[in-house]
Amino acid sequence: MVSVIKRAGTKGQPLTVLATAPEEANPALLLVWELKALERAGEFDLTVSVAMQNQVQEALSQGETETKKISKIVQTLIQLKPSPYHQVPVGF
Image (cartoon, rainbow, N blue to C red; front, side, top):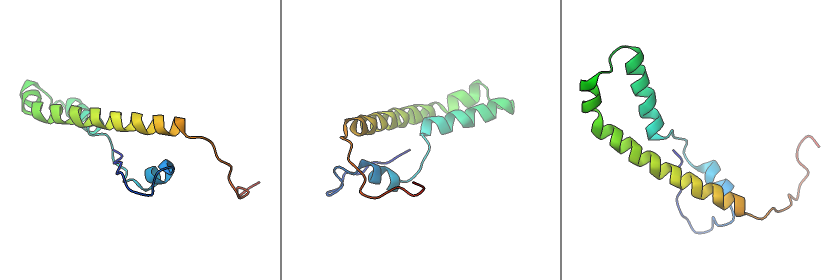
């Protein structure tokens, strides 16, 4: 999961904001991986499914929120105007 925090002075620097954001996995993906592991171990059944229903709903909600944030970031990056780099990149 990438947490985006609005701060003064970061406008025009979305890559900096992304680079400094904590790295986290989408909660929905984490839950899917956990459920797949239970299934492979033969421990996933109706009882487990019912017991995890609230956790599944929460993970889906968080996953949807995360997807919306990422979509917004992507749109912001797409709309950025290119600007020249004032130094020669290493290796050129």
